[in-house]
Length: 301
Ligand SMILES: C[C@](O)(C(=O)O)[C@H](CC(=O)O)C(=O)O
Ligand SMILES: [Mg+2]
Image (tube, rainbow, N blue to C red; front, side, top):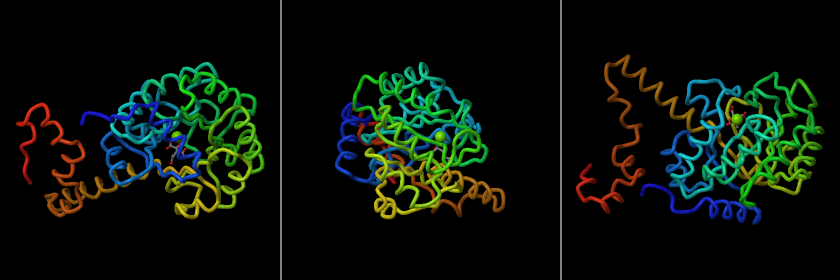
């Protein structure tokens, strides 16, 4: 009822413990606070808050137009609705090292369990688009060091994302990505997000080169194939995100329903696919609110 009863520091400690135990964690992207409840209800390990989704939700392309305030607010709204840890996409940290420090403290205050900071130039773009440019290693490591120094909860997970694998300007390629991943771990990164890996062998090469958890981004229509949990576990990946999957699914269903209403004059044929009123009420825990007033939950299916 109302919100998660697990504190942000307990969520962070739990996330750390599971990663330290060598588990593989699956984090679907929540496109709103309600979907975070669904992710928890279905037994997932955590919730991802995607920059691409926050941008798309606002009708914007994912090219660094969103602000720290917008991202932290949305991440906080999502994080507070679930007992699961939430990891948020902090893009480039919203500026250079001093901004990164402020970003980390703001995200800590928002109650998330961790974030990732990438080495693209400002303004960034979606990691699976062509034409990306990355900063030099010194700037990339400074961002991570600033993030690590700024956090007040040592369990807040600072993850470094490197986009060099598929960048066209600046250093590029798998070898550079691996060297950079190692340098980012030396700078204090708790985990590595190697963006736009081409195959399982590339994930394996990164995972075996660093002694921190590695994240695999299973985004659709991108540069990486969609591997299964077991395939990724076998090559040493520990965190898997499905960043835009639920938004794409929901928007696909919305489009089909709109077409149906236009074509047939009614949504009746789509009702079977919809989440029922009863299920929605279950997710928002209407019944729990009877604690305050027994007249609130009067709905019977
Ligand atoms: C993971 C990602 O950074 C995101 O914002 O969710 C995106 C996902 C996408 O655009 O499909 C990315 O750059 O990979
Ligand atoms: Mg992003």
